[in-house]
Length: 135
Image 1 (spheres, rainbow, N blue to C red):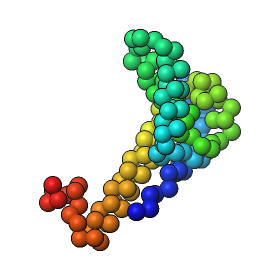
Image 2: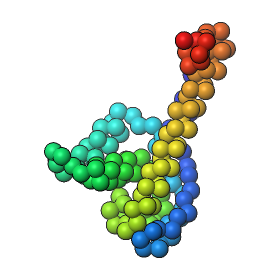
Image 3: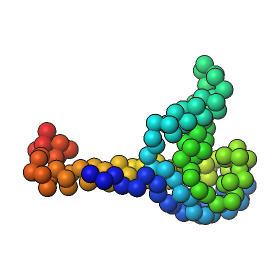
């Protein structure tokens, strides 16, 4: 079974709540990570948490969002490239919006995998393990 492409594209057009800046452009993102990229993601998240034993929920959330954006964004508009991986952006809401779009693209990729698996199973005459009848 051929896997769906592991990169996807989305556009954003968002006005920041704090600065009023308009953030727009097209992003190319990874929808699934290989083991090296997962390792990089975890290292980045740990670095952003600064080895705090008990980080606040806000610090954990920021680390989660920034680490995902930094590892999963492959190509982006110039404003993102100049943002130091999101650190220089005043508008938290734009970072949350970008993160939501990343998650949506990952969900779409996983749904495409599930669909391909079901199609292969039906062609081979094997029951779909995801269907109630195949359980």
